[in-house]
Image 1 (cartoon, rainbow, N blue to C red):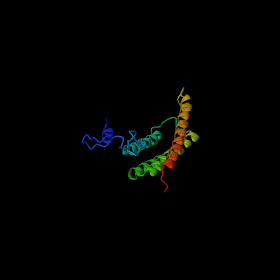
Image 2 (image 1 turned 135 degrees about the vertical axis):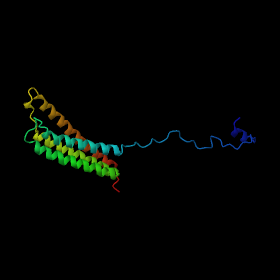
Image 3 (image 1 turned 90 degrees about the vertical axis):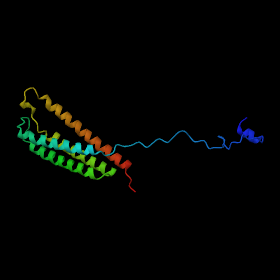
Image 4 (image 1 turned 45 degrees about the vertical axis):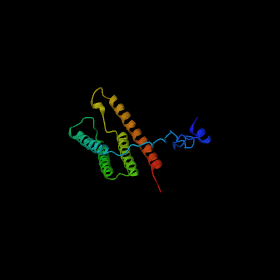
Length: 172
């Protein structure tokens, strides 16, 4: 005989338990935690700054080293690469101190836009002449493909970051 039947019959087992039928049943299914999005990491900014400084040193040293495949158009492309790199470094420094998600997306989108611009200029001008190295003519095609892939990656990244900004931003 269970407690409810015993109470109905006037008998009591002396305990003051609340029957499970009288208690609300709590669901064992817990709501799913919100998916965490990748946030800002200082290591991203420091790595971005260091990598960009190394890139600046490298591309500016090519002419000093007398790299034979560079054409006269290299100066035009180098100017754009330098402007892009300085803009990227400034953006990374800014992101170190401002920790607002919308600013993060805008800053990363700005970096991608600068990379897109730099890649477009490099593809358009293409200041390389691989004919100076016999048998390396194929490298020009490979480099153009790599540059186009980089261009498309930057373009897709801009689209994704813009959509994430719109979706996650609180405009109130």
